[in-house]
Length: 403
Ligand code: ACO
Image (cartoon, helix red, strand yellow):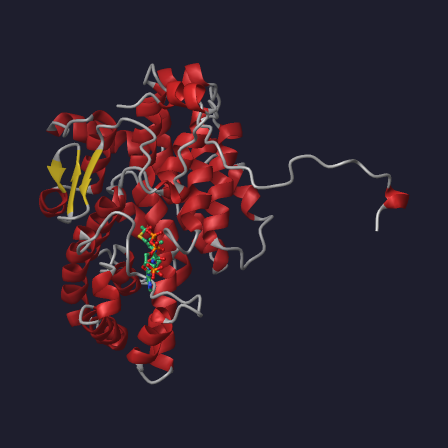
């Protein structure tokens, strides 16, 4: 490999790579992607196998510890996740300061950042020593935080986690159960949620994970680093795309299902509109995550007739896009966000919770990257360079002389 620092010292050259399309920022053994072939593996395991046989709890353990847990290790991890699932009661007061219509992603980022104050030992040394405890806290509490945000938005009392329920069961119950409804957990819903969270659990150096690493490289604590990652994920070009897809499908439906109009708009270089849920920086083939979600979506929505119109539009849109030269020549295929919103809707989640679900799924990946970084003896503070295009030097004028 070229020693860039030496090269710059000798030649003054800076590598210019806007959007870091071809710049490696670290060495990692967590996730492997082959974008040309549509392959995704966590710690060497194919995503298809993990989705078929594993659970989100088990995959979280795998990402954090680089091995699948034994039965005993998985039971212990589940137990710890339940033990850490409550939020500090004082944190609940913070919810009262948000307006009722605050976006839950905003609440989530703020709450995770606030955890630095409620849970002590946040300096790097202590966090390194207590990383398993902090990881367990974050993975468990982000789910409770999200459910509280939702309950606040609809003006309902919060539902506390139950110790005899598993991760996804507890999540669905905290979201949808209330003392006056008959909400009952369904196995197929629990399984669908678990698979969706597995599919979001890591994706190497994407925008939010790189943000977590960059903030963490300054030795900011893990809560603060992850809160920054949540902000990055909120953007509509990243995790916010799942919400944008549903808004787009609903709009197409309102406008009489005229798909071609939206395809033409996305191709028009004078418009800033893009088809949400299509294209990916790394995948130049069908996103393997989208394939799995599409299958779940078809299976679930067969039974949920109420959501059929949007599924129908999504299927027609995909079919038309995959025949269109503009999209084919640029290798723009459905990505993870294209079908996930339809499944979330069938599970009962409102649109503004979709990106929150992405964040909950991504949590073990963010932590695994932070952990890998702080343990790397070669890790340095992240500090990209730039090409300066401003004025070379200007003379300072007193305010009376300025025109
Ligand atoms: N609709 C229409 N045209 C598109 C789309 C799209 N969804 N995506 C890319 N293009 C076009 C671009 O206009 C560009 O065309 P050009 O070569 O004529 O200039 C070409 O395809 C390459 O696009 P880039 O923007 O250079 O690709 P980049 O890798 O920077 O961006 C991104 C990837 C952000 C995902 C992009 O495809 C996009 O905006 N997609 C829609 C938003 C979305 O679905 N985001 C979720 C991504 S998955 C995730 O973050 C979890």
